Length: 360
Ligand code: FA5
Image (cartoon, rainbow, N blue to C red; front, side, top):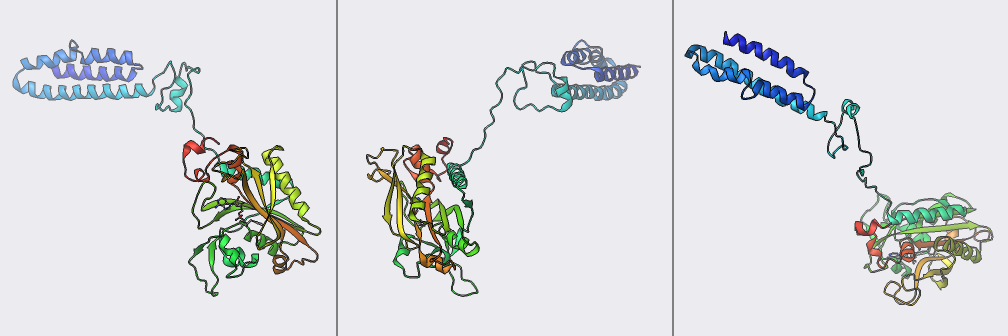
C-alpha cells in the first residue's frame, strides 16, 4: 500500500522535473518533493512505525527513489546553468553553444571588451621592408643567397685568396664540413657580398639587385657590434656606371630613409672587391654629432661600405670590365633604427626583451 503510494509520487515528481525550465521552478520542485514538510519525506519518516519486514522492503525502494530525486535535481541544475541568461553581459570563461546564444535576452554592449594582444613585426623586419621598398622603387630587384656559404664565394671570388690579409676584416665562423669533391670549405657568410658573385654568375648586365640577409662574425660584441646581424647588399652593373651613380643612389636612399636634414659622409675605405672603395656614415642622432658612447665620440655612425666593382671580380664571372662597370654596397641594417630612434645598444635587438620590442 505505502509502496504504491511511493511509486506514484515518484513518477509524478519525475514528470514535473522534466518540465522545469528555470531555477525558480526547480527550487519549488525541491521543496515539494525533498523539503522537510513534503509528502515524500513524511512517508520516509513514517517507515519507522511499519513492521520490520515491510519496513525493509519499502525502506530500500524509498531510499533508491530519494537518491534518484537528488541526482535528477543536480542534473537539472547543471543543465539550467549552461543556459543562464546574463543580463549584464557574458562573464569571461563562459562558453555558449548556438542554442544558448539564441536565448540571450539582453547583452550589455557598453561593457569593455576583452583586449586581444596582437603580435608585431620585429624592428629589423620592419626596417628591411622599408629598405627593400625604397630600392625597389629605384628599380632594384630583391634576391637572396645562402647563409651557409662556400669559402669561394665569401672570399676567393671577391678577390681575397687564401692568406689575403683582408680576410682578417671578417672574423669567420667555419663550418666543419668536408665534401667528397675535395677540400672545399664552408662557413657562415661574414657579409652579403657573396650574393654579388652568385647573381653575376647567373644574370648578364644590365643588373640591378639588392640582397638582404643575415651575416655572422666571430667577434666580441659592444654597443654597435653584434656577432649576428643583417646586411643589405646592393649591386648595379651596366655600361657607363660611375662613382657618381653610386653616390647619387646612396644619397637618395639616405634622403628617403632619414629625411633631407640628416648629414651623410662619404670617405675613402678599402675592400679588396671594389676599387675605389668608400665608407658612408650618418651623423649620430643620439648626440647630434657632439660625440657619445654609441658613435665612439666621433659624431658619425658608419652604416655601409661600398665602391666600384673591382675589374678582377667582373673578369672572374665572365663580365668584360672593358665594356661594363658596376657599383656595390653593403649596409648594416640594425644601424639604421639605431640612428633613427636613438637606440644606444645594438644588443637590444636580439636579446628578446619584450619591453624593447613592443616599442616598434
Ligand atoms: C662589408 O661587410 C662589405 N661586404 C661591404 C661592402 C659591400 C663593401 C660591397 C663594398 C662593396 P663591413 O665589414 O664594413 O663591410 O660591414 C658593412 C656594414 O655592416 C658596416 O658599415 C656596419 O654598418 C655593419 N656592420 C659591420 N660589422 C658589424 C657588426 N659586428 N655588428 C653590426 N653591424 C655591423
